[in-house]
Image (cartoon, rainbow, N blue to C red; front, side):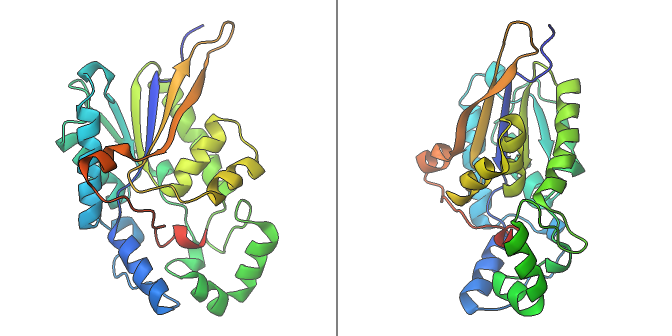
Length: 254
């Protein structure tokens, strides 16, 4: 049967953003709202995030050209696109990598009325939503005008169908967000709600960390993707770049 999956997929969370820094400041001050003036989609990388993305690009660049990513898919959010751009600028893509697709299905999980609130802010301003989230759990809780994890998974199913249709046998780099990384693990590994939430409970997806899958052929099937690494940050550690784990403003209450 024809191989419909890429030969390799790297899923990267964007580098640390200015929103991470603002979220930490609001949390430390016990504030209800996070002080960010621009839209979440427009929040750029912090100086540390730029350093992280460049370090990751150099790690990819150390691979033979025939093993580096030759297709790049990114969230439309500025921090994800800047991360991908710095990976490219550091020589991290294959010489034949000409395809860079911005896919809105890879965007951050939307929080609706809870956008830009800290946990304290949700409890103070929307106590009914805090209670509902506790009762339903983060996998199924959908805030007004926002999304649940299930909603994110629904759009990611469509995105991965596109990947399998157009990028079979390619080497694909996906740059997105913490919840997207986790929800893609749920899909690609056929996990249960309990299993993916257990992984989430173990700790945040680190900024610019790598989650890597390799294709494995199986007789009588179209094959499958096997997890090779998760939350891999050696490229930053080896380069002396800071390793950060801060949730984004929207990720902090998910």
